[in-house]
Length: 320
Image (cartoon, rainbow, N blue to C red; front, side, top):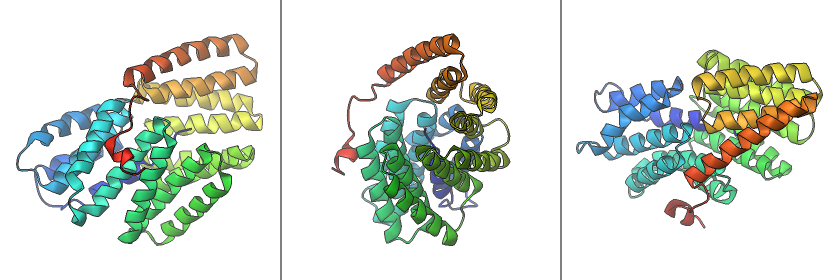
């Protein structure tokens, strides 16, 4: 299950802008609002022209490339996302005064590597970001990095390490400033995921409901995070044996993801694959088999088209 720490990255990014100035910073702030609404194609349309503006300052250009990377990533355009993240790191690398933005770029980039299933590179990028946040005593950044490291540890079946980093995220969040409901929703979601890994489905259901409530309050009913929240809750329902709720929540989540991300988006496809497992568990074997076959074929085509395993970037290699 892929969780969303991207919005914390965006919050850290935009909070560093010098408010009150117009163009290009106004366009960057406008793009941030579009991203919060899940309008990633509009983010790309808004920001791509800025990358060729000669008057852009180093932080403005770094911010623009990070936001573009996040938007491309959410659109499922992994190669373009990777290029954008590389550009952001190249812009910021020689400017230690912008180490907070560099850490933000690493955090966003690590999420792309996680979704490309290169956990080693994702882990090293997140650890480097965490160390940079610690050096500048950025408690919000520390909280976000620790929460994401907990997710990666769960993916690698390291429950004790996941609990360690969850504890780190919770402690940092107590003194951090500027954390939004998105962060606490992601934290609840991660705790739910750990409960699923421990087969404690009732606790997972409770955590996912909390996360879903926070995402709805922050973004309204029609948002990618809300759709994904229903999918997560549906999986926990199925684990608890609540098959009626599982099917209902999965269908609700798929409907929202179709309306927001689109049926060709990788998140929608992953949700369909999860739904096929719920259908199988509920006894709808034929429907489950047909959906799984169709979705696996679509995912294979997506990953082949994105050349997901083609290369490890220069940024990732530098962390080896």
